[in-house]
Image: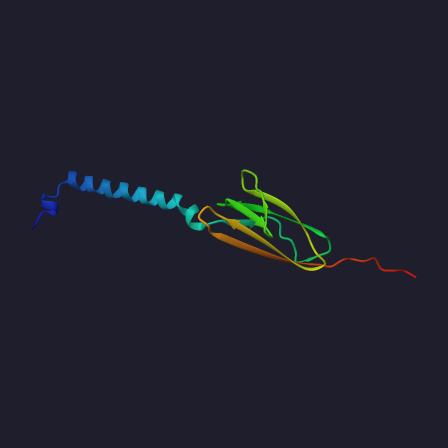
Length: 128
């Protein structure tokens, strides 16, 4: 029988190589765990669900953004607090409005979120 690595297999050698494999596995697993933010890219989660049909002229978009360096609403930069929370008012035009939120990360990736709104004005009925 040919010995492993030119030596006889001893308990000491087995423990030594097992420790090396375990330590390497821990380092790789920790690196992948920490890289999850880099791999996932920018994300935005809206906390308020605003309906598509609106009777109010102004709607508020709010939520949180992660892994971003820049956040825009219809091309205009908006800002977050330290925890990534944002709250921005959007004035609706008559009829159909599209709101596009873009989240940019430091590696140039962009994620777009689109919300559509229809503004229907409520006019009081005339009485005769």
